[in-house]
Image (cartoon, rainbow, N blue to C red):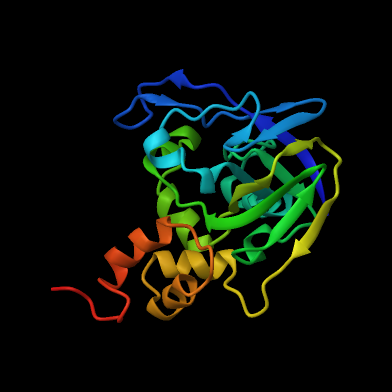
Length: 215
């Protein structure tokens, strides 16, 4: 398992980028070592900090194998970084990673926190009809990470799994929890150190921790 490319992007104005009309989804491959800071990679920007500026969304990874799966369905080539990911991986089952799983890449340590949820900016960026539903149905979301230890990384670095919680919830399962699987969501809420974003998902899906939906 290794990093195929490291991708960063600058925020730019774009009429198609939702209500904000500004986005940094266009991530481009960069060479050399890149510093990993508390809230993401050096040189990377996020325009929509309200929805994408949380420390638990500091780094986003997507698997090259999932791009290869999409290409014949979309009828087009997909370059590394096209889905807006910071890290394009090779040989790693990113969507099969477990919440709380920790990866060492270079000298940095990252922890899996959540799946990517598609939005209108993602759809408009790709200009694919029905993209939000197609991406959701495929459940090949890639994964967000928080930064546990700052350091640096670069293309070609191996991915070392330092810790994988036993009996944990995978990214694919957590995506189902986000979309209403109550049992999986309750499992996530019981995970120590889970992202507080899951508590807000629980307010929507469960209503409260007892599993009784609020009226």
